[in-house]
Length: 390
Image 1 (spheres, rainbow, N blue to C red):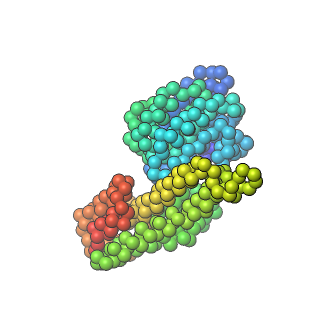
Image 2: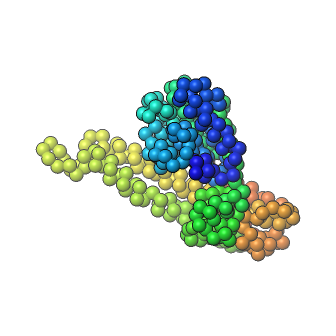
Image 3: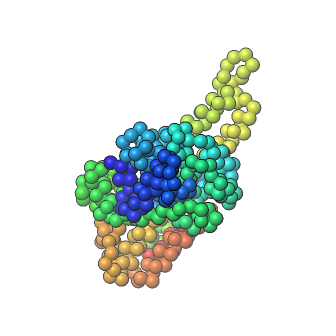
Protein backbone atom coordinates (compact mmCIF):
# COMPACT_ATOMS: atom_id res chain seq x y z
CA UNK A 1 0.00 0.00 0.00
CA UNK A 2 1.15 3.52 -0.78
CA UNK A 3 0.68 6.51 1.51
CA UNK A 4 -2.18 7.85 -0.63
CA UNK A 5 -4.25 4.66 -0.43
CA UNK A 6 -5.96 5.79 2.80
CA UNK A 7 -7.43 8.93 1.18
CA UNK A 8 -11.05 7.94 0.62
CA UNK A 9 -12.77 9.30 -2.48
CA UNK A 10 -10.00 11.76 -3.40
CA UNK A 11 -8.81 10.35 -6.73
CA UNK A 12 -8.31 13.73 -8.41
CA UNK A 13 -6.29 15.19 -5.53
CA UNK A 14 -4.23 11.99 -5.23
CA UNK A 15 -3.34 12.28 -8.92
CA UNK A 16 -2.10 15.85 -8.43
CA UNK A 17 -0.08 14.97 -5.33
CA UNK A 18 1.42 11.86 -6.91
CA UNK A 19 2.73 13.86 -9.87
CA UNK A 20 4.06 16.55 -7.54
CA UNK A 21 5.88 13.94 -5.43
CA UNK A 22 7.54 12.59 -8.58
CA UNK A 23 8.57 16.13 -9.54
CA UNK A 24 9.95 16.67 -6.02
CA UNK A 25 12.10 13.56 -6.41
CA UNK A 26 13.49 15.08 -9.63
CA UNK A 27 14.44 18.23 -7.72
CA UNK A 28 16.30 16.16 -5.11
CA UNK A 29 18.25 14.49 -7.92
CA UNK A 30 19.16 17.88 -9.38
CA UNK A 31 16.43 18.08 -11.99
CA UNK A 32 13.95 20.85 -12.75
CA UNK A 33 10.92 19.19 -11.16
CA UNK A 34 8.10 20.97 -12.99
CA UNK A 35 4.91 20.63 -10.97
CA UNK A 36 6.51 20.95 -7.54
CA UNK A 37 6.15 24.14 -5.51
CA UNK A 38 7.16 25.27 -2.03
CA UNK A 39 3.69 26.04 -0.58
CA UNK A 40 0.46 24.02 -0.67
CA UNK A 41 -3.00 24.71 0.71
CA UNK A 42 -5.25 21.74 1.50
CA UNK A 43 -8.94 22.66 1.80
CA UNK A 44 -12.16 20.72 2.15
CA UNK A 45 -15.17 20.19 4.43
CA UNK A 46 -14.85 18.56 7.88
CA UNK A 47 -14.03 14.89 7.54
CA UNK A 48 -12.68 15.15 4.00
CA UNK A 49 -9.20 14.38 5.30
CA UNK A 50 -7.24 17.63 4.84
CA UNK A 51 -4.61 16.72 7.42
CA UNK A 52 -4.44 13.10 6.24
CA UNK A 53 -3.81 14.25 2.66
CA UNK A 54 -1.11 16.71 3.78
CA UNK A 55 0.57 14.06 5.92
CA UNK A 56 0.51 11.55 3.05
CA UNK A 57 2.08 14.15 0.76
CA UNK A 58 4.75 14.86 3.39
CA UNK A 59 5.56 11.15 3.46
CA UNK A 60 5.78 11.09 -0.34
CA UNK A 61 8.21 14.01 -0.27
CA UNK A 62 10.46 12.45 2.37
CA UNK A 63 10.31 8.88 1.07
CA UNK A 64 13.00 7.80 -1.47
CA UNK A 65 10.25 5.91 -3.34
CA UNK A 66 7.73 8.79 -3.38
CA UNK A 67 5.49 7.39 -0.68
CA UNK A 68 5.81 3.60 -0.70
CA UNK A 69 4.01 3.39 2.64
CA UNK A 70 6.19 0.70 4.23
CA UNK A 71 9.69 2.15 4.61
CA UNK A 72 11.09 3.77 7.78
CA UNK A 73 10.69 7.27 6.29
CA UNK A 74 6.97 6.78 5.59
CA UNK A 75 6.41 5.18 8.99
CA UNK A 76 8.12 8.04 10.83
CA UNK A 77 6.06 10.64 8.97
CA UNK A 78 2.77 8.85 9.60
CA UNK A 79 3.41 8.59 13.35
CA UNK A 80 4.80 12.14 13.52
CA UNK A 81 8.40 11.37 14.50
CA UNK A 82 10.34 12.20 11.31
CA UNK A 83 13.16 14.70 12.02
CA UNK A 84 12.42 16.69 8.84
CA UNK A 85 8.69 17.03 9.52
CA UNK A 86 7.40 19.83 11.72
CA UNK A 87 3.72 19.35 12.61
CA UNK A 88 1.76 22.29 13.99
CA UNK A 89 -1.56 21.75 15.76
CA UNK A 90 -2.99 24.95 17.28
CA UNK A 91 -4.13 23.83 20.73
CA UNK A 92 -6.25 26.87 21.52
CA UNK A 93 -8.70 29.10 19.73
CA UNK A 94 -5.91 30.88 17.85
CA UNK A 95 -2.25 30.64 16.89
CA UNK A 96 -0.21 33.68 17.88
CA UNK A 97 2.61 35.61 16.26
CA UNK A 98 5.17 34.51 18.87
CA UNK A 99 4.50 30.85 18.10
CA UNK A 100 4.60 31.57 14.36
CA UNK A 101 7.99 33.28 14.55
CA UNK A 102 9.40 30.35 16.52
CA UNK A 103 7.99 28.01 13.86
CA UNK A 104 9.59 30.04 11.05
CA UNK A 105 12.99 29.81 12.74
CA UNK A 106 12.66 26.03 12.96
CA UNK A 107 11.51 25.87 9.33
CA UNK A 108 14.65 27.68 8.17
CA UNK A 109 16.89 24.74 9.06
CA UNK A 110 18.27 22.47 6.35
CA UNK A 111 16.77 18.98 6.06
CA UNK A 112 18.76 16.49 8.11
CA UNK A 113 18.39 13.69 5.57
CA UNK A 114 18.96 15.72 2.43
CA UNK A 115 15.48 15.72 0.90
CA UNK A 116 12.98 18.30 2.23
CA UNK A 117 12.11 20.21 5.36
CA UNK A 118 8.30 19.93 5.60
CA UNK A 119 6.06 22.15 7.75
CA UNK A 120 2.54 20.71 8.15
CA UNK A 121 0.33 23.45 9.61
CA UNK A 122 -3.07 22.07 10.64
CA UNK A 123 -5.92 24.57 11.14
CA UNK A 124 -3.90 27.38 9.58
CA UNK A 125 -7.09 29.45 9.59
CA UNK A 126 -6.65 29.81 13.37
CA UNK A 127 -3.58 32.04 12.89
CA UNK A 128 -4.14 35.58 14.14
CA UNK A 129 -3.69 38.51 11.75
CA UNK A 130 -0.19 39.20 13.07
CA UNK A 131 0.70 35.52 12.84
CA UNK A 132 -0.62 35.36 9.27
CA UNK A 133 1.52 38.34 8.27
CA UNK A 134 4.61 36.66 9.72
CA UNK A 135 3.70 33.43 7.93
CA UNK A 136 3.31 35.31 4.65
CA UNK A 137 6.90 36.56 4.81
CA UNK A 138 8.16 33.01 5.37
CA UNK A 139 6.18 31.66 2.43
CA UNK A 140 7.31 34.51 0.16
CA UNK A 141 10.99 33.77 0.74
CA UNK A 142 11.37 30.12 1.77
CA UNK A 143 14.70 28.28 2.05
CA UNK A 144 15.45 26.13 -1.03
CA UNK A 145 14.31 22.81 0.45
CA UNK A 146 11.46 23.92 2.74
CA UNK A 147 7.86 23.02 1.85
CA UNK A 148 4.82 24.50 3.63
CA UNK A 149 1.62 22.42 3.81
CA UNK A 150 -1.25 24.52 5.15
CA UNK A 151 -4.67 23.08 6.01
CA UNK A 152 -7.92 25.08 6.27
CA UNK A 153 -11.63 24.45 5.64
CA UNK A 154 -11.69 26.88 2.69
CA UNK A 155 -9.21 29.04 0.79
CA UNK A 156 -11.13 32.17 1.82
CA UNK A 157 -10.27 31.43 5.46
CA UNK A 158 -6.71 32.60 4.80
CA UNK A 159 -5.35 35.97 3.69
CA UNK A 160 -5.54 36.39 -0.07
CA UNK A 161 -1.81 37.10 -0.17
CA UNK A 162 -1.09 33.73 1.46
CA UNK A 163 -3.45 31.64 -0.64
CA UNK A 164 -2.22 33.32 -3.85
CA UNK A 165 1.26 31.91 -3.13
CA UNK A 166 0.02 28.37 -2.46
CA UNK A 167 -0.99 25.61 -4.83
CA UNK A 168 -4.55 24.64 -3.92
CA UNK A 169 -5.63 21.04 -3.27
CA UNK A 170 -9.40 20.84 -2.80
CA UNK A 171 -10.70 17.70 -1.13
CA UNK A 172 -14.30 16.56 -1.40
CA UNK A 173 -16.71 14.76 0.93
CA UNK A 174 -16.46 10.99 0.36
CA UNK A 175 -19.65 9.15 -0.50
CA UNK A 176 -21.47 6.99 2.03
CA UNK A 177 -20.58 3.87 0.04
CA UNK A 178 -16.86 4.75 0.05
CA UNK A 179 -16.80 5.40 3.80
CA UNK A 180 -18.78 2.23 4.53
CA UNK A 181 -16.38 0.20 2.41
CA UNK A 182 -13.38 1.53 4.34
CA UNK A 183 -15.01 0.77 7.70
CA UNK A 184 -15.86 -2.76 6.61
CA UNK A 185 -12.53 -3.62 4.98
CA UNK A 186 -10.01 -1.80 7.19
CA UNK A 187 -11.76 -1.74 10.57
CA UNK A 188 -13.68 -5.01 10.37
CA UNK A 189 -17.04 -3.31 11.02
CA UNK A 190 -20.11 -5.41 10.09
CA UNK A 191 -21.58 -4.14 6.77
CA UNK A 192 -24.90 -3.00 8.24
CA UNK A 193 -23.21 -1.07 11.06
CA UNK A 194 -20.73 0.40 8.56
CA UNK A 195 -23.57 1.68 6.35
CA UNK A 196 -25.37 3.21 9.35
CA UNK A 197 -22.22 4.95 10.61
CA UNK A 198 -21.22 6.22 7.15
CA UNK A 199 -24.70 7.58 6.49
CA UNK A 200 -24.99 9.24 9.92
CA UNK A 201 -21.53 10.83 9.62
CA UNK A 202 -22.25 12.29 6.17
CA UNK A 203 -18.83 11.50 4.75
CA UNK A 204 -16.81 12.36 7.89
CA UNK A 205 -14.58 9.28 8.13
CA UNK A 206 -13.31 9.88 11.68
CA UNK A 207 -16.83 10.44 12.99
CA UNK A 208 -18.10 7.41 11.09
CA UNK A 209 -15.38 5.29 12.67
CA UNK A 210 -16.32 6.60 16.12
CA UNK A 211 -20.02 5.83 15.58
CA UNK A 212 -19.18 2.36 14.35
CA UNK A 213 -16.74 1.43 17.11
CA UNK A 214 -17.65 3.57 20.16
CA UNK A 215 -20.90 2.96 21.99
CA UNK A 216 -20.50 6.25 23.88
CA UNK A 217 -20.38 8.16 20.57
CA UNK A 218 -23.63 6.52 19.49
CA UNK A 219 -25.22 7.40 22.83
CA UNK A 220 -24.19 11.07 22.46
CA UNK A 221 -25.73 11.17 18.98
CA UNK A 222 -28.99 9.70 20.25
CA UNK A 223 -29.07 12.27 23.05
CA UNK A 224 -28.63 15.17 20.61
CA UNK A 225 -31.21 13.86 18.14
CA UNK A 226 -33.75 13.49 20.96
CA UNK A 227 -33.66 17.26 21.49
CA UNK A 228 -36.07 18.37 18.71
CA UNK A 229 -39.04 16.39 20.02
CA UNK A 230 -38.32 17.41 23.64
CA UNK A 231 -38.66 21.19 23.09
CA UNK A 232 -42.29 21.58 24.10
CA UNK A 233 -41.91 24.58 26.40
CA UNK A 234 -39.55 27.28 27.64
CA UNK A 235 -38.42 25.20 30.61
CA UNK A 236 -37.60 22.26 28.38
CA UNK A 237 -35.58 24.55 26.11
CA UNK A 238 -33.48 25.88 28.99
CA UNK A 239 -32.93 22.36 30.34
CA UNK A 240 -31.88 21.06 26.92
CA UNK A 241 -29.43 23.95 26.50
CA UNK A 242 -27.90 23.36 29.93
CA UNK A 243 -27.52 19.67 29.22
CA UNK A 244 -25.89 20.24 25.83
CA UNK A 245 -23.39 22.80 27.15
CA UNK A 246 -22.60 20.71 30.22
CA UNK A 247 -21.95 17.62 28.08
CA UNK A 248 -19.52 19.62 25.93
CA UNK A 249 -17.73 20.89 29.05
CA UNK A 250 -17.44 17.37 30.47
CA UNK A 251 -16.05 16.00 27.19
CA UNK A 252 -13.47 18.80 27.04
CA UNK A 253 -12.47 18.24 30.67
CA UNK A 254 -12.12 14.48 30.14
CA UNK A 255 -10.02 15.02 27.01
CA UNK A 256 -7.61 17.47 28.67
CA UNK A 257 -7.35 16.36 32.32
CA UNK A 258 -4.51 13.84 31.98
CA UNK A 259 -2.62 15.99 29.45
CA UNK A 260 -2.89 19.10 31.66
CA UNK A 261 -1.55 17.20 34.66
CA UNK A 262 1.40 15.83 32.71
CA UNK A 263 2.29 19.22 31.19
CA UNK A 264 2.09 20.97 34.56
CA UNK A 265 4.22 18.35 36.30
CA UNK A 266 6.89 18.52 33.57
CA UNK A 267 7.01 22.31 33.69
CA UNK A 268 7.33 22.37 37.48
CA UNK A 269 10.16 19.88 37.23
CA UNK A 270 11.94 22.00 34.60
CA UNK A 271 11.77 25.01 36.90
CA UNK A 272 13.20 23.10 39.84
CA UNK A 273 10.23 22.34 42.05
CA UNK A 274 11.14 19.59 44.48
CA UNK A 275 14.88 19.95 43.86
CA UNK A 276 17.18 19.45 46.81
CA UNK A 277 20.78 20.26 47.51
CA UNK A 278 22.94 23.24 48.39
CA UNK A 279 21.59 26.47 47.01
CA UNK A 280 18.33 24.90 45.89
CA UNK A 281 14.83 25.10 47.32
CA UNK A 282 11.76 22.99 46.85
CA UNK A 283 9.76 25.74 45.13
CA UNK A 284 9.85 27.11 41.59
CA UNK A 285 12.93 29.07 40.59
CA UNK A 286 12.65 32.62 39.26
CA UNK A 287 10.52 32.74 36.12
CA UNK A 288 8.70 29.54 36.96
CA UNK A 289 5.52 31.24 38.16
CA UNK A 290 5.20 33.20 34.91
CA UNK A 291 5.79 30.11 32.80
CA UNK A 292 3.21 28.21 34.83
CA UNK A 293 0.65 30.99 34.34
CA UNK A 294 1.32 30.97 30.57
CA UNK A 295 0.81 27.20 30.48
CA UNK A 296 -2.46 27.49 32.40
CA UNK A 297 -3.71 30.08 29.91
CA UNK A 298 -2.88 27.76 27.00
CA UNK A 299 -4.62 24.88 28.72
CA UNK A 300 -7.75 26.98 29.28
CA UNK A 301 -7.70 28.03 25.65
CA UNK A 302 -7.36 24.40 24.55
CA UNK A 303 -10.27 23.35 26.78
CA UNK A 304 -12.41 26.15 25.34
CA UNK A 305 -11.58 25.04 21.82
CA UNK A 306 -12.48 21.41 22.57
CA UNK A 307 -15.73 22.54 24.18
CA UNK A 308 -16.59 24.62 21.10
CA UNK A 309 -15.71 21.71 18.80
CA UNK A 310 -17.93 19.37 20.79
CA UNK A 311 -20.81 21.84 20.69
CA UNK A 312 -20.35 22.40 16.98
CA UNK A 313 -20.50 18.67 16.30
CA UNK A 314 -23.80 18.49 18.17
CA UNK A 315 -25.17 21.47 16.24
CA UNK A 316 -24.27 19.81 12.95
CA UNK A 317 -26.23 16.74 14.07
CA UNK A 318 -29.27 19.01 14.49
CA UNK A 319 -28.70 20.58 11.07
CA UNK A 320 -28.71 17.15 9.45
CA UNK A 321 -31.89 16.21 11.34
CA UNK A 322 -33.80 19.24 10.07
CA UNK A 323 -32.29 18.84 6.61
CA UNK A 324 -33.76 15.33 6.51
CA UNK A 325 -37.13 16.73 7.60
CA UNK A 326 -36.99 19.31 4.81
CA UNK A 327 -36.06 16.63 2.25
CA UNK A 328 -39.12 14.60 3.25
CA UNK A 329 -41.37 17.66 3.14
CA UNK A 330 -40.20 18.53 -0.37
CA UNK A 331 -40.14 14.96 -1.60
CA UNK A 332 -36.44 15.17 -2.48
CA UNK A 333 -34.84 11.89 -3.46
CA UNK A 334 -31.71 12.24 -1.34
CA UNK A 335 -30.09 9.95 1.19
CA UNK A 336 -31.27 10.66 4.74
CA UNK A 337 -28.48 11.01 7.28
CA UNK A 338 -30.86 9.88 10.03
CA UNK A 339 -32.73 7.16 8.22
CA UNK A 340 -32.76 5.15 11.48
CA UNK A 341 -35.05 7.87 12.92
CA UNK A 342 -37.48 7.86 10.03
CA UNK A 343 -40.53 7.82 12.36
CA UNK A 344 -39.44 11.05 14.10
CA UNK A 345 -38.56 12.65 10.78
CA UNK A 346 -41.94 11.71 9.35
CA UNK A 347 -43.77 13.21 12.36
CA UNK A 348 -41.93 16.51 11.99
CA UNK A 349 -42.47 16.53 8.24
CA UNK A 350 -46.23 16.08 8.66
CA UNK A 351 -46.78 18.53 11.53
CA UNK A 352 -44.58 21.43 10.35
CA UNK A 353 -44.07 23.35 7.13
CA UNK A 354 -40.93 23.65 4.98
CA UNK A 355 -40.72 27.33 5.97
CA UNK A 356 -40.64 26.40 9.66
CA UNK A 357 -37.96 23.80 9.00
CA UNK A 358 -35.82 26.35 7.15
CA UNK A 359 -36.18 28.77 10.06
CA UNK A 360 -34.98 26.06 12.43
CA UNK A 361 -31.95 25.31 10.25
CA UNK A 362 -31.17 29.05 10.19
CA UNK A 363 -31.45 29.16 14.00
CA UNK A 364 -28.85 26.39 14.37
CA UNK A 365 -26.50 28.06 11.88
CA UNK A 366 -26.85 31.41 13.70
CA UNK A 367 -25.89 29.66 16.94
CA UNK A 368 -22.76 28.30 15.28
CA UNK A 369 -21.86 31.80 14.08
CA UNK A 370 -22.42 33.28 17.54
CA UNK A 371 -20.17 30.69 19.13
CA UNK A 372 -17.46 31.63 16.60
CA UNK A 373 -17.87 35.23 17.75
CA UNK A 374 -17.29 34.20 21.40
CA UNK A 375 -20.88 34.66 22.54
CA UNK A 376 -21.48 32.95 25.88
CA UNK A 377 -22.32 29.32 24.94
CA UNK A 378 -25.20 29.01 27.39
CA UNK A 379 -26.88 32.14 26.07
CA UNK A 380 -26.30 31.22 22.41
CA UNK A 381 -27.62 27.67 22.82
CA UNK A 382 -30.64 28.78 24.89
CA UNK A 383 -31.59 31.27 22.18
CA UNK A 384 -31.33 28.51 19.57
CA UNK A 385 -33.44 26.10 21.60
CA UNK A 386 -36.21 28.66 21.95
CA UNK A 387 -36.18 29.16 18.17
CA UNK A 388 -36.41 25.37 17.66
CA UNK A 389 -39.35 24.99 20.05
CA UNK A 390 -42.22 22.91 18.62
